[in-house]
Image (cartoon, rainbow, N blue to C red; front, side):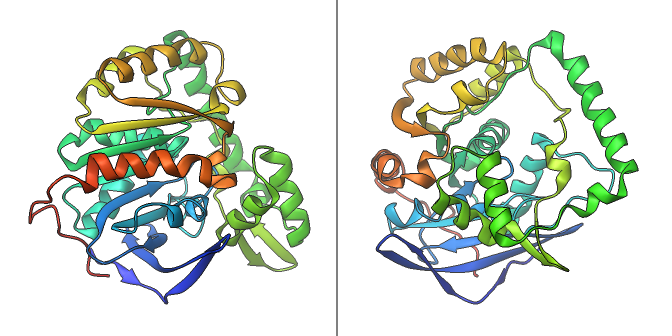
Length: 328
C-alpha cells in the first residue's frame, strides 16, 4: 500500500500559520484522506475526529502542540474527503479500527500516539486495547475511550439499526443528499451542532462540503447517521480498557459529552470508566467549555496536551524501529 502526497498548502489558526500536506491512502473501496503536519521524522501522532466531523477539527489545536511531532489527522471513512463505504455496509467501531490499521500500514508506523475526539476517542480506545504494543500514549478529548450500552438495550438497538439501513436503501432521494447554498449549509451545521462556534463551522465545512449542481452538499455519507449496530457492554468495555498499555490523558469538557449526548444507563457507566483510569494513574482533567472546546478554544486544551506529550512521549528514548515513518 502506498501513500500519496498532495500539494503543500497553509492552514491559518489565529496568528499561527503552518504548512500542511494532504494524505491519500488507497483502500479497497476508494481512498482515505487527511492532513499531515510537522517534520518528516517527527514523533508520530494519529488524530481521529468525532462523529460527523472531519480532520479539520484539529486545525486550531495542532499548531499549538509540540513541533517535534508529526501529526496525521485523517478523515474517517464516510467523512470529509474520504470515500464512503460500499453500498450495504454499516459504519461501526470495528470497521473504523480496521481503517486505522490500513492507514498505519501505509504510513509504516510501528509505534505512535493517538489523539481522539469523541467518537475518535472511542476508536482510539478500541485500537489501543487490540494493538497495545503499537500505542505509547493516548489523548481522549471529551471522550471516555469506550461507550458501553445496557445489555438489555442491545437487541432493540441492533434491530433499529437494521431497520434504518433497509429503509434508507429504499429511498433513492435520501442517498443524494440535500443541496444548499453555502450560507444555508452554515446555518444547517450551526443548528445541528450548537457546540460549534461559527468560525469552527467554517473550518469543518472546508472538507465537509462538496460542490454539486445547484450549490453544495454535505460530503459525509448519510449512513453515518444511522444507528450503530455494534455495541459493547460495560463488562466488555472494562476488559478492553484493561488491555491498554499506553499512558492516557482524558480532557473532559464541563458542558461536554456527558451532559449533551450520554443516554440513560451510559451516564451511570461513565464514572466506572473514569475510576479505572484514575486507579491506573492515568490523568483525568476537566476544562471549561463544551464538546468542541478543542476546536473552539484550543488554547484551553493545548497546555494539557503539550505537557502530556512532552512528559510521556518526547522525553522518552526512541528506538530505531519506532522512528520509521512514511516517506510522504
